[in-house]
Image 1 (spheres, one colour):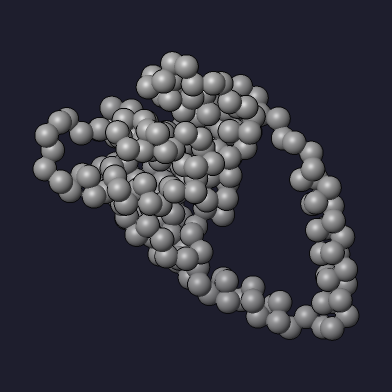
Image 2 (cartoon, helix red, strand yellow):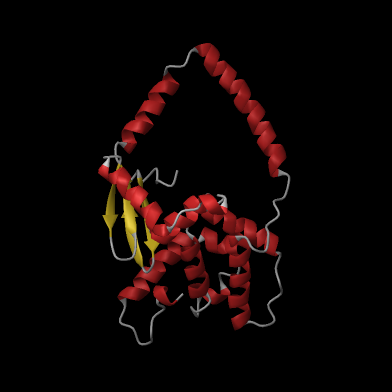
Length: 224
């Protein structure tokens, strides 16, 4: 589910890496957090245990792991074949099956539209809400008179960055801090929606600045 479907650049720490289809970035901490989510306390596993299970999959020839001292890139073996097989199954459906699925899809679309009219409420302990508060505080550092926004609306934009755009919590937090330390961007990026819209552009700007000779101490990802 985490594997990318097309080649794209991803910010990992202070480095931009290129992911190929069927690859995703993980680490012991993020792997444990993802797999323990929603599990009963007695069923949760340690970081070491989850990492050992992932390495077992590599030994069984199901995936490959490119390891560094800060992160790992997982490549799913035969990922493209799985996508092709699924496409072939879809193409072999009969006319009646296709019509039935079309009718179901129309009904599902209508149901989804009804669901979309209901506003999602974000708990204060949720990651989207916490990141929204963090961004608001960084803006207030520069402008104490900045009016408090609708944090629920902000949280929904942050959620879209995570669920739809596949940005990580660390990447979002990093850019939220960076834009409010940049003399130009601090007045241009004043909401998660604007951050989302310019995310890739801002990533490239971070990369360009890191390639310039530094007159000041640069922002260190590990300090965050």
